[in-house]
Image (cartoon, rainbow, N blue to C red):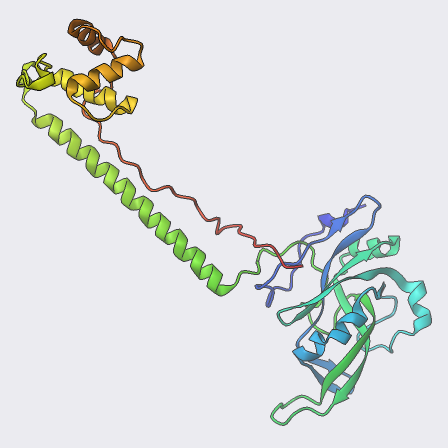
Length: 324
């Protein structure tokens, strides 16, 4: 037998862009749970004429409360234009029931449900998804300026929801097969997310450009240094009178940078770096020079920059929590 959840997706998505419905889920006991669009705002054609269903009628708290926990029934001979289902028929045609999570989503009345009978599963496996709610209603004459409308519905009170082959309310009034790929994102929040993502990408781009510029500048500076510079002696001044060469000075500065040592003369930096590796702070100049010569340091001057940290905002697949 084909699994209910293996049936291809079917959507009525013309107004589904502002929220997400839960798709069909098969439970361990064989029952199936999901969500459906029970009714939607707009005109509906009956044998007596065209009824307008306004949003306030669907959103009425008393109407919503009347739908909670109502039975779901199979189609039998029921069609949108058939006589109202009588109460004694409901027990023999019951396939499940509406849940308690009934609410308005945009212009749609949405409800959760459970189908817990073999007959209901069979109908789902045959591909039935359209629904037709049964209810009592008060019809009023429409307000002027609504051509093509004979009545306006008010005071709906639900009796059941039937699973049918074709819904009077149109293709969108149906069970949803799988969760819609559209989400309840407020427009202002979406704009803020996009703006933040663009700003962070701009910062990252600037950081990458800065890194490239500094690298090129460093290479140019190294290329312009005279070949004899490695052998030149620094003027003997103060604590630097030991005569560090340019090459030794560059290496000491690199080692100090890596070791996180700052401040002091070149000799003091050399002693601080050596001390971190266990060399006595009062070691002789020759010992200190030998340590510096044998130490491994980065090649050349190192200019370090840190690009701004980038935390991507997952615009693709971003699903804010649906308020239950």
